[in-house]
Length: 279
Image (tube, rainbow, N blue to C red):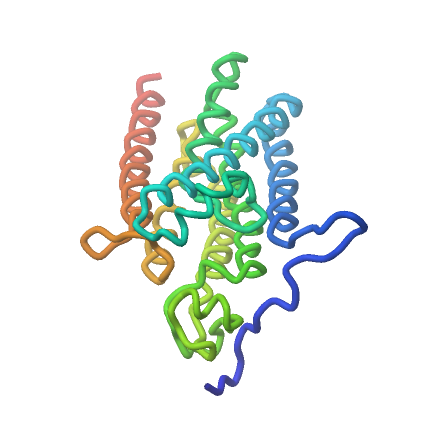
């Protein structure tokens, strides 16, 4: 199959560094987390918050997010019919911790990170609204970097396509997906990465314009924007475990998040404007 241009497979997925073997998957996730944490700290300080609080909450978000993401990835595979996925976790339970091999469920990570931060903010008496506004663009920024890690793992690609930006993968990943080794695919991880970068810009632009009046509304914009983007990108993927009425589980979750966030945004903004009018 001839392509005028295409995204080639990654030249490597890791490297040797003495007794260590860093994986690019983990490196780009760590890089994204570090940059996002810096953005969160600067924004929270600009809103009058303590940088120390932002850093502590950010680290808790990372810890809770990774734990939730891994749990969200592993649990459905214990109940799946695919014995090839089920057996390794049963026979080699320590592989549950092997995030460098891939396998992080974003919605599980979002729930785990949000829960960890919520508990921290409540326990320390920290207002939730300003922190939510501060972290709103930092989350998609971290995701934008993190999604590139899927390229190095050759995973989360979409349906076969012959567009000029199609993704080439090695024979192994193509065969596991059930396709010949010369098949090219939609680079859905790249779509999501670019969507998230755009979402960062949108949130910062809305914030600069001062269009939203309610505290925490920027975080709701993030949820609505991510849900919308994940919905159409998910429809292109071929690695889903199960489908309901033609859509994957993540499709339905993304759709629900978009609709709930949109309704919440309209309600919060209406309430804020009514309050301003009363004052």
